[in-house]
Image (cartoon, rainbow, N blue to C red; front, side, top):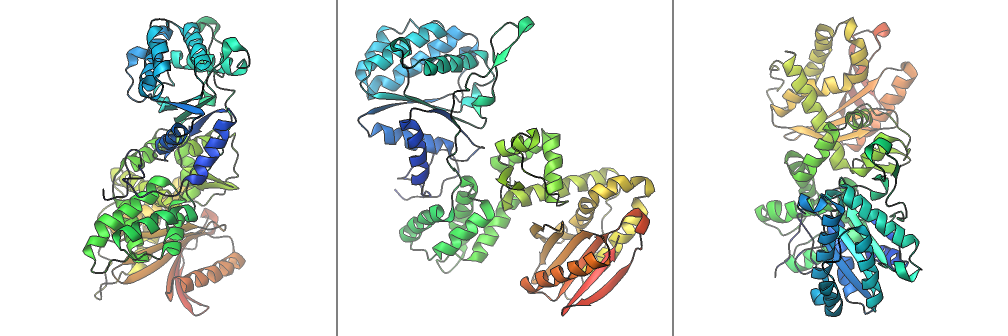
Length: 522
């Protein structure tokens, strides 16, 4: 069977090109062999199900382990209405998993299938199963988020916790290891142990070990997938360089890596005469990905919309360049990590450059729609010159006038916070209306926002920054000149936001270090 890049469901070694997950599997196995209970909690499409399947097959091939695999996705709500219903369902899933893997244990469960009437009787059944088995039983449950809102599931976790704590006592012998997989860390769930009038809470899963196995893929783990594809399809790829660049854009997020590769292999390569992957192909794949809708991006935006504080923090980091110290106990930061929006890097960073650009595009579009609703976003004039290039200078002067016309003194507090987003929303119809886009966003430590715009064969660098005085201005010009040099252009553009007290509304061409910079103060 011919392999392909997979972005939906479980990845299978015989059917799909896969990254090297051997180190991850070894890390998980180390925890299982130590008899730990833990949750693989990662965002959607992060390889959790594929990892569980790999663990299952690895344990199945060994003589000393008996893996039991379950999936709680799609389980009917009727099985969560009571402890008895949940216990009956779980016992049935146990029987089904044992039918081929361990016929003797299947018969034991079949003979006692009516005994699981509540959590206590289910606990006793698990103990009998553990005593009967001559192998260590490892319980693997996928998609536990589907059950985490139901009290019977939480009491089930509490029962497993109690058995774990007393597992050395023969009457409480239990699973050797339990591995749950889901978006949320089950340790954070609270178990109600009294009625509503005297509600008290404790954690049903506080015995779980921290899961510290790195689930994102580094360049050296991405490379084997590219080698496999290159050899199978006779396609030329500079594997080390390509693996590095894939990691640069994705930070090793499994779905994004596979999606970019799939786009090049199935959409871009067939249009070429040479069977070669180039960096331009990767750039095109990134742009195609940023323009499409998919469930991964839908989930990303939904999480921002459903959590206003997460939305605001993302805006401050991406558009306003605010540096936020990383604190795992801060609820918004913790939520951002849970959903894969942020990553740990000393300060809070957006997880990867593709997410950063996607959120950036979304923020601009949302601001533009707000301007439309307020009547501030009339169709812009044509800024295209006779040679097909853009008259960025005229557009920036028009933005300067736009702020003067549309934002009075009473709007200054809003403008202080949102001026970058207002500019980007102002620019949106100019760019999108002419079929070109923001190529790249970079926020520096100096809270500069560098916007790279491409149109046909032309490239424009527009830097947005605050006015902090002449000395900072000269340092900024040095940085911009260096950046223009790296981008291989001779002219750049600078939008400088001044406070209300220092408004000058200046505009000027500046010669600096062999570069020409058009600056407007707004």
